[in-house]
Amino acid sequence: MVVGLGFVGAVMAAVVADSTDEQGASGSSSSACSGRARAAFGRSRCSTAGISPVKAEDPNVELLISRCVKEKKTLVATYTEEALKLADVVVVDVCSATT
Image 1 (tube, rainbow, N blue to C red):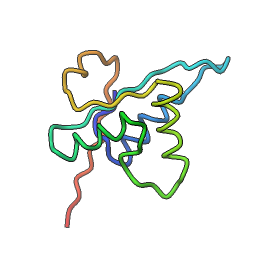
Image 2 (cartoon, rainbow, N blue to C red):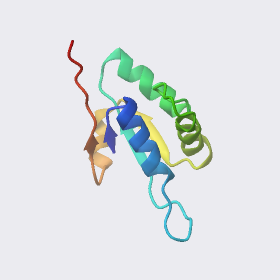
Image 3 (tube, rainbow, N blue to C red):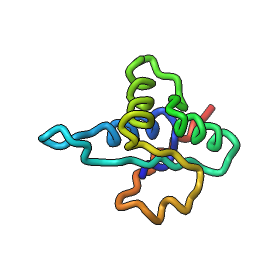
Image 4 (tube, rainbow, N blue to C red):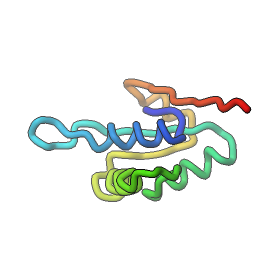
């Protein structure tokens, strides 16, 4: 479970969801959880639809997220904190910007 659907968290969750074992089989599934703020809800909805919640310079990021959500079905996004109870591992990606 990755908490935080910003640039780092969204990409990390997608990379984990896209990983495979030595035989090429999907070995992991990944969930991404964002907070309760309105922006977090929007990011979760985008991710669930297979749309990247962040704009990246690398065009492969959007393709990666879309593939994991729509084709592989190994990436799920939520804004519900209850999902944390299902996680084996939790990674928190939070960035605090200062002005």
